Amino acid sequence: MAESASHKFGLGNRETWWVDPPGGRDGGPDKVRWPILSVLFTLPYLIPVTRSLLAEDRVTPGVVALWVLVYGYAVAYAFFPLAFDRGRPVRVGYGVGMLLMGLGLVAAMSANPFVLLYGTAAMVFLVSPAWVVILDGAALALAAGIMLLAGRFGENYGDLITVASVTLAMFFMSSLIRAVRGLEQANKEIATLAVANERERLARDLHDLLGHSLTTITVKAGLARRVLESAGDIPRAVEEIREVESLTRSALSDVRATVSANREVSLSAELVGARAALRAAEIDADLPHAVDNVRPEFQPTFGYVLREAVTNVLRHSEAKKVKVKLGDTWLEIEDDGTATEVVPGNGLRGLNERLAMVGGTLRASARPGGGLLVRAEVPQPEPRAAAKAVRAEPAGGLA
Picture (cartoon, rainbow, N blue to C red):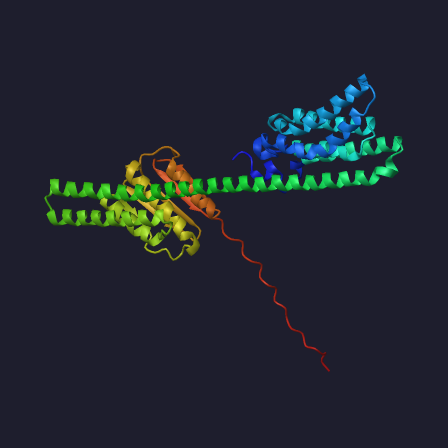
């Protein structure tokens, strides 16, 4: 995926302090129910302010402006979730507008600094944590300055501290919500990747398994047909057909084991199978008789390489001779076929993936006289540093 959940939602990366919160319903309060719920939060502020405004002797432009400011602030608080789907400039502008209205009320009506809490709370959900710290921090500092100029700081500084504390608590609550949703998204991505990896494993295993088995069955069935057509050697044809039957049963068993992820590949068994398949195709096979010199942990991987290489020889090479060499951490398959270039396909891609799991590499190259050379190699583990021998010295000197 192009972007990990941890980067997107701010888990463990300092750059995500500048990442905007997710939009839509998952970004904060519900867009439909929140306006109704917000009435319960704004009534404790609107009721006394409305009484104060109604108590004015006459309606002046200043009083009208205060009515607009008071109820505009409440409406902005009720509908701030609508800004979630907008871009960062809109969200920042909306939040700054609410903060300015709150500061205007603190200055114009000598209101309690609690009124600023609606703006700081909205800002927590609208923008990224870095912008929250900058903008809410600036708003609280400006509110403190307004109270100092009005001579009300000593009387209301405790309320301002309360506003800052509640804003900080909501900041951490918002961060926790984003982290939880980020983990949920990460779990979904992990599940999707697990399914994709399992599909790739099945596709790779079935390609390696069925490709080789079906190719060998085809070769042996063709040999039985040629024996019957040319020599009429029924006993030999029956023997080849029995081997085809055995291969079919073995392939069916391997498919079941592959689907259940319980299949193990043996390099020695693959050598036996390669010898039989190449003999049936009338290809001269120069194969090792033992695999004892190959490191045990690499034998299953090399078994897959040998199986795929022999399958390609049987299918495409038109080779007359195949030679296989084994080392402790490498395997080479060489043929004298007609291939003059390497054409990447599912087989080579699957082998590269298998070797990458054990830290190895695969090289396939065309030979000068025709044919292919396939080499799989795993780097030799670095030997541990031998402990230095320490000679024991006598405890005392010689007399």
